[in-house]
Length: 123
Image 1: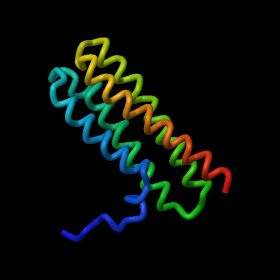
Image 2 (image 1 turned 90 degrees about the vertical axis):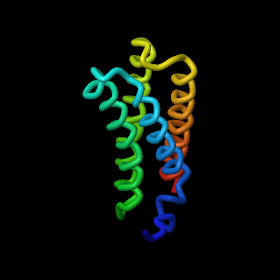
Image 3 (image 1 turned 180 degrees about the horizontal axis):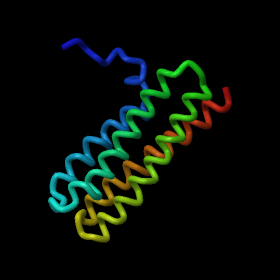
Image 4 (image 1 turned 120 degrees about the vertical axis):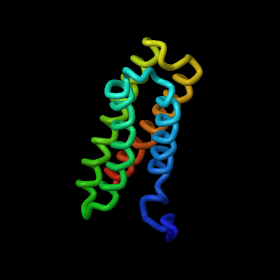
């Protein structure tokens, strides 16, 4: 398999952090009740993957306007993750430590994406 690390988006910190978030969400949702497979588990996974894919797609677009559009979608997906995490904690599918760990990752990524958007808007 060829080395994929030379792709342009691999250099973006927001891509790296979003990739790590997906791995973490997949790890913890393995332990959710089976009855949530098509509920919160599916929603968390889809929203997390959406963040990564929108960063990649935006990065590959020809214009800054397009990139900003896809980053905006990624920000919306991060908000979905936050709400789904709160529900997961309230339903005792996550313990406090797991919740805090992932919520901190989401908050950090939301901040980084927001800062990246501001940076793109300045140029």
